[in-house]
Image 1 (tube, helix red, strand yellow):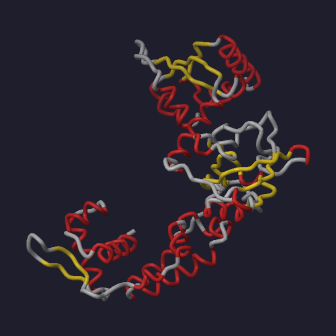
Image 2 (image 1 turned 60 degrees about the vertical axis):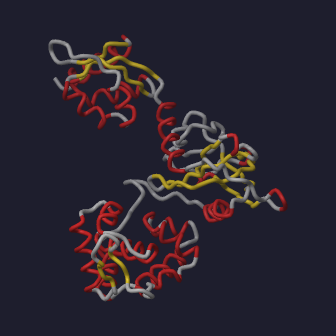
Image 3 (image 1 turned 180 degrees about the vertical axis):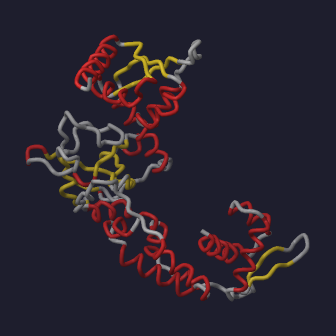
Amino acid sequence: MRSSRLMALLLHLQAHGGATAADLAARFEVSVRTVRRDVAALAQAGVPVWSEPGPRGGIRLVEGWRTRLDGLTGDEASALLLAGAGGDALAGLGLDAVAAAARGKVLATLPPQLRVRAGQAGERFHLDAPGWFTDAEPVPCLAAVAAAVWAGHRLDIRYGRPDRQDRRDRPDGADGTDGTEGTDGAARPGRADRLVQRRIEPLGLVLKAGVWYLAAGQDGDSQDGDIRSYRVARIVAAEPVPGPRASFTRPADFQLDRWWAASKEDFVRSLHSWPARLALTALGERILAGVLDPLVARRALDTAGAPDADGWRELDVWFEGPEVAESQLWALGPHVRVVAPPSLRAALAGSARRIAAINA
């Protein structure tokens, strides 16, 4: 949005004392012409910005002028950076009041024209993170977990164990004994004999489709790279570790976004371990990603060979199991042929005959 870029441009000029139009264009991934229009908009809004010609010139703010945004507290600045997660997420992290204060300070520092524009954002855009037909699951320990993540403190947690037959909700499949899940897919603590005790080193929180996950090492394992995922809704108690053992050293090379991306891919691969060889038409290949998980579809298409005389290509696909394979392949209709295993081909053919007989 242009208003966001104008604010970012203003803060960049204040922090760096000025910059050339070319440098600003490269930084904000726009054209030099767009930068000049943005500078003109700031000037029209009352910001004392000017351009100095020549090889050492550039775009600068009048010396001594500053926006009051540097009056933000650390918590307020953090809340602004997390604002895209939505109001419910900020409330769960205990940052809703802080975020409101930060928004008030930002609006108060803007020139009138930009203030009106920024105020309209909440009227025109709304983020609803959870998927359809699902309720947000309760996360009573989220605030305590978030506080430990911020502070870099160890936690003693009690955590629900999963039903072994259903471990789909673990994004990395790392801890096969953790979490419980109801038949409706909502996480909830199990019976007392299903709870386990863990001492963990919390490194980061991820909000995925309305579900909170915690990245953490077990006590002393973070430095060894043994990072596991915990569904926060399954944490039924979280207590800070007291005394000299409270703090831990965060791994210097840990990056939450990269870890999460790798964990998601590993999780999908761990679920899909039942192989089948298929032949697909060109149309079948195009719709494969809509039938399977996109990661699984890409993995399968990477194995595709050359097309035969009729345009069919053979490839290897990994499913969760034979029943899931049969149900998913129905969506490909006449654009799929099972090469192997024979049991899947027979199951698909048998179901087709039964459906044809019923609808004859």
